[in-house]
Structures are given as structure tokens and as C-alpha cells.
Image (cartoon, rainbow, N blue to C red; front, side, top):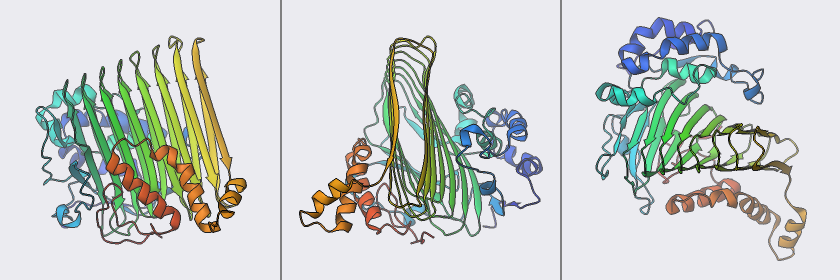
Amino acid sequence: MDNVIKNIIGRDVTLDGLFEENRSLIEGNSSSVMNALRSDAFEAFRRLGIPSNKVEDYKYTNLQPLFSGDYSLSLTPDTLVENVEDIFSCDVDTLDSITIFIVNGWYYARNKPDGLPDGVRIGSLAQLAKEDPSFLEKYYGKNAPYLSDGIVAMNTMFASDGFYIHIPRGVTVEKPIQIVNILMSEEPLMTNQRNLIVLEENSEARVMVCDHTLTSDKFVINNVTEGFVDRNARLDFYNLQNQHNATTQVAGFYIEQKEDSHVKTNNLTLHTGVGRNNITLKLAGTHAEGHTYGLYLLDKNQHVDNFSFIDHAVPDCFSDELFKGVLDDHATGAFTGKIMVRPDAQKTNAYQSNNNLLLTKDAKINTKPQLEIYADDVKCSHGATVGQLDEEAMFYLRTRGINREEATILLMYAFAYEVIEKIQVEPLREQIRTLVEKRFRGELDKCHSCVVCGQKGTGVSCM
């Protein structure tokens, strides 16, 4: 760790003060494109700060105490891991993917994505900023609300690296692109990672991001991903979270779609401490389709807050949203889904649903589906349900010789099935099916396996 600059965030050190103290180092490890937004982001952060539950969009998750305390902040690439390949080896032979690694928010220097079609670029965002600044400048900061959201402002202040994916016009990437986000440290760590995904006209890609922890220290993660999907392009995006209970993660995904584009996102939280997912789809071209799905499985004192904003900015677009949660023990969850239909967005079709299963009287969920419609020729619906296991279905299974524990698992799996089946990558879908069943059986009590492909880690216990 000698080559890594660390700064302790203590009770007497503010995040804006830490930024001012280390600004020259942050900017020295970055580029003019990313540095150009830091001043405005800094002023926005000083005005907004880390959101508390007094901020309407964060009313169910107070992030302020989670982002305070003693944490190290990595300001240069971490050299703790020299050979990621020695730690991870895929156990699912059928998952043939293009795999890259991110270590503590920094692009792993030894990544060698093989088998890329001509023109496809995958690499370090920091390196892109130096090699092709005009390309990055076209997209960087255009979707992420760094002037109105304190968490995004913080990310824009501190972030220096992450991954980027650029699929040129007319290219289809047949293999899934797998991003493995690794967190490991010898002390509590805070990371800020910035990512960019660009699909040009008539292109297609499937991207899988797997977040997980390899050591038992506390982690605070602030990731922002901006996506741009051009005319008639198709993006399937999967974010799979499997982290120990001492992890706090805010993951923001902000995407803009042009005409005839097709975007599908699926957020699956199998294990975490506190999670907040911000998902924004802006349908900015006619006949664009946006599909947003999510599944969260919580127990103990875990908490996950899914916040989505589907913006129908033009006519003749379609969106479909489905989030499901299973909460056990003292777990808490939240879902806020907002569909906005702009005044000119006639002939909009938009559907939203949030369904939750509470297994104990102490588990709690706050759900807030919303429609804001300023056009009159639309078809829109939204709804939410909160309930317990169906006793009639339980009785039916018990009368057929199935014990109560097995019947409970079957009913929970049937509840989650609808979201799992939205996964289009078959090997991934089969792996998630297995992991979800293990989660329900209480077998997935250690965060030592990559959700995507069952890769072995260090066997860290979930507290």
C-alpha cells in the first residue's frame, strides 16, 4: 500500500475540505475534460451536501451518517492487487464474456479485453480522457445531475477513473461485456467511480456489472454511470450487487435514448448493507423503449432504496417498470418510481409496478409509485403491493406432502421468478436462479462468490 495516497475522513474533516486539500493531486491524476466540471461540482456540493432524508428524493434513506466516520480515500490507482486473475477464475464455462476488472474504483492496468469487434473500445475512463478528449467531452457530465444531486456532485468532484465502453455504428457485440468491480482494503475505504457507455446508431451490447467485496472492512461506494444509446441501438444492462453487510453503495445510472432505441436495465441485489440505486431513463427520441426491472432480497438489518425516474420527453414511446422485493428479519426497503410524461409526449405507453413480500412483522417497506402526466393521449398505469405469503397457496403445497420450510422457499421463488426471467443472457439467468434459491435457503451467507459466474474470493463473512 506504500504507493497509494490515503487520506482519513474523520469527524473533524469535511468532504469539501478534503477536496480542497487534495485538489492538485486529484486533478494531476485526471484530465482537462474531467477537471473542467470539478469547480461547478464543488460549489454544488457545498450547497447541497450529502443528502439526508429531509431531501424529498432521499426521504427513505439518510446518507449523511453513512458517509461520515473514519474512511480512507484512494486518490491514486491501488496496487494492493497485483494479479486479479489469480483471485478470480470463472466456474461457469458457458458464460463466454469479455471481462474487465475495476479495483477500488480504478481500472485494472492489466486488463486485456480480447475478441472485440473492429472499432469497439473498452478501457479506462482516465486513459480515454487523455487519448480522445473530444470524444469524452461530448458525453461527460451531460446526463448525470451533478448540479442538483449532492451525491453526483461529490462523485464529479473526486472521481478520476472507471470504465468506458464505446460501440461504434452498426456493430453488435455478441459476447456479454462483464465488469467485475472489486473492493478490497486493509482499512475502511471510500471510493468514487465514474463510468461511460456509448452505443452509436444501429449498435448492440449487453453489459453486466458485478459489485462485490473481498475483505471485511467497511466500504462506502459512490458510482455514477452515464449512458447514451443512439438511434435504433440496443443496450441490456445488468447490475448485480453481492456485498457484505458493512457496505454502503450508491449506484447511479443515467441514460438517454434516441429514436427507435431499446434499453433494458435489471438491478439485482442479492446481498448488501445499505444500497441506493438511482436509475434514470430519458426517452428523447420517438419510438424509444425503456424497460426497467429490479429484484432485492434482504434480511437481518439490510436496507435497499431503489429510485427510478422515467422521463417521456417525446411522443410515441414505451416504458415498462417492475421491481420486486423479499424482506426478512428486520430488513427495510424503499421504492420510489416516477414516470414523467411531458406536454408534447402524446401516445405514451408507460407501466409501473412494485410488489413486496414481507416475511416477518419487523420487516418494512416504503413504496411510492408516481405518475406526472402533462399530455392527454396516453396509456399509463402504476401500482404497488405489500403482503405476506399466500396462506391458500401454502395450504395447497402442504396438502401435497411438502413441508412448510420447502413450501415457503417455493412460494418466494415463484414471487421472484418474473424478474429473473427478464434476464436475456441464459448462463447468467441460470446462475441467478441458483443463487436466489440458495439465498432463500440461507446458504448464501458469505460474500465470496461473484454473482455473475461463481468466482471464488476470500470467503468474507456477512455480518
